[in-house]
Amino acid sequence: MQCIQCKRLFLNEERIASISGSIMGDEHTDAYFLCPVCGVYTVASWWDDFAGVESECLSGPKSKQEGDERVELIRECSEPWDKKCRCEAHRKYFNDTLD
Ligand SMILES: [Zn+2]
Ligand SMILES: [Zn+2]
Picture 1 (tube, rainbow, N blue to C red):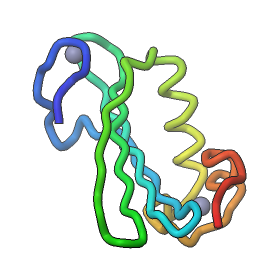
Picture 2 (picture 1 turned 90 degrees about the horizontal axis):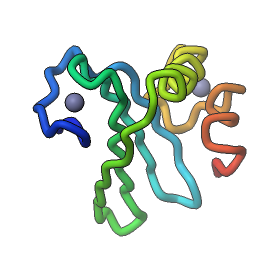
Picture 3 (picture 1 turned 90 degrees about the vertical axis):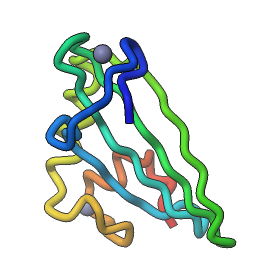
């Protein structure tokens, strides 16, 4: 994974937060990386559809403030990697579109 702005490769510890959820049977994961050089976030998203086909896309750069808000929301959940979690943070993050 690399910074969408400066193309610098991210280190493991620069992965700040990630969250998974299932939307209409597809598994969706977002991971937030913060670049220490640019000070902005890059968001990596993965979808795993019911046929097992995986797609990946990068979005951003997201401002530190905007990214921090999402990361804070993700941290409200104690198990953000659990795609079956239906806590308030999960529902809010995915705009109530979870299965
Ligand atoms: Zn960068
Ligand atoms: Zn949750």
